[in-house]
Image (cartoon, rainbow, N blue to C red; front, side, top):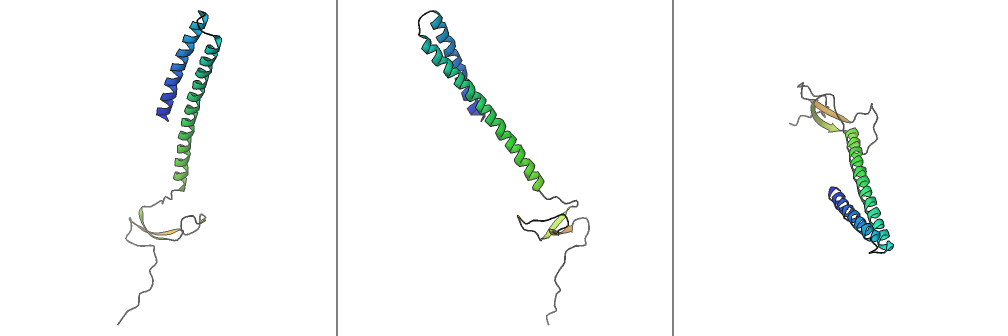
Length: 123
């Protein structure tokens, strides 16, 4: 957006210069009023394009902020450090505060809070 903004700003500057030139030539009687009106139209159109690209840039920035906030809210954080041993909830599943969504192994303790199936002795 920044490059586009600079391009339209340069075009606005050029069209304003052309408007000043046409206005001066009209005052001296060397050009018709139609040319001044055309230059005025170009300058106004360029000004609107500069404003439009500025607003589009601001909209894009606010969208990025919104998406970052949504991503931050969707990140699951645990109050303890550890390793996830098993995930019960799949992506997109509806869960509530009391739903068991995963089982983890705490890095602070050597004890696991995960369940293992019973092993059978093979002879």
